[in-house]
Length: 232
Image (cartoon, rainbow, N blue to C red; front, side, top):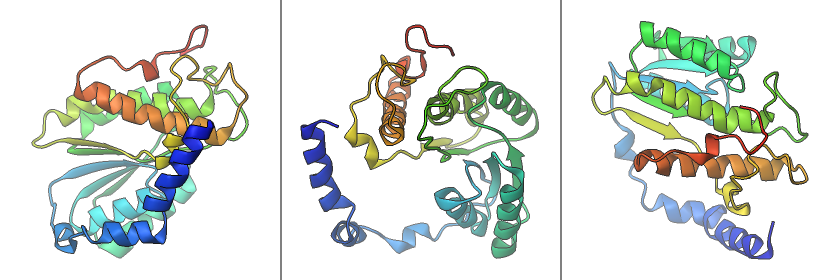
């Protein structure tokens, strides 16, 4: 991390990621905005078995929405689904087991989903931080495969389903941690620099923002194109 980015991150962190930042942001929060009911709306939440994803899925369920949980591991995902159903009283909670670092699994899931379900909102929440450089069976660096390429494939594949519905949305969870790194589109799979899981994660989260901007402007996204010599 450069000195400049360290200073920016420190200053932004003090202002926005501390108790005082929370208290400042609370002033603009309107609790009534959350008092909505959404029966008939269908949501897909990746990584919905824990953390932000689970909390999001639960709140959607409480408001009457149909929720599709996309998770990697069967047992914790089943537990989360059961808990969400019990706490919300909503039976319309469905589970799909998909490894988002495996492009073939994602495509297979998307093709099946398109035939069987409708979708109003896609929430790309799942993420990983692998601290040692590892490759998937396809030769992809794991963080890139799950956090960047997987998100791109899932979103691209589901756009035709979303476009069929009124007021469709795609929400991708990024992180302020992306500010510690300038996005290097020439080394997306961390082949040319010393590997640091935290910095790689920051790269992945920065790629989310670039891909979102590219999709808004209808431009090709370089963040999901392999670096020279890298497999995809």
